[in-house]
Length: 261
Image 1 (cartoon, helix red, strand yellow):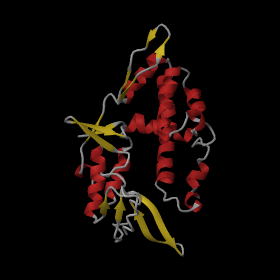
Image 2: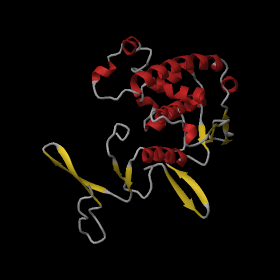
Image 3: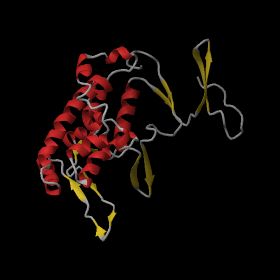
Image 4: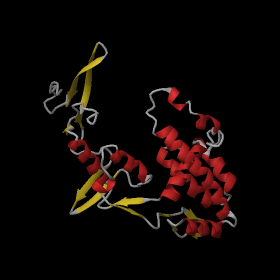
């Protein structure tokens, strides 16, 4: 909105920007709170590019290797050793092969489907503004509806390719970021496996809050005004138009603070 020339004021309930992407500072230490995974770096790049900026203008990224470590639950008779997931694809195939013979080549097949879903899903679905159903009347979407696996669950899709429970769990876990379960999630979301395995897990230097600081800086550079510690409790609407925003209506005195805008 600010880029389009509007005067923009953001009322923020908390004392800092970021919402759930917060920091905890205690005893000289700084901890990230909220988001802890940085996937799909091109999405962040696309955001900053839309304002004539680059990610590197605000923070530095490193791809992690291993991407992450998996701790398996207590097994009868002992505990399985943690498993490091390598960033290198060929090394990951070897890891799969050691767990389940034949699963290395099966991973190639699985990822071939996942990259198609990623390219179509991201470019044809995610980046659409979602203002009308007509946006999705796209021939590539229509002809690829079965390749996108929207009628099969992630659980069934993965079990079709891999029989080992550990490999199944490893490939199912990304859907947890959707707040969903594999059996209730369309197999379209194996596109997240592509984001995980091929695009990698990244770390912003100085922590995840650098992303917030970068986005906050872009907004300020565009003239956006932020008012913190402002808990919005009412938006007054007259004749279908918002005319007033009431913030901090519950002060210590118990009296309304009056309109802030």
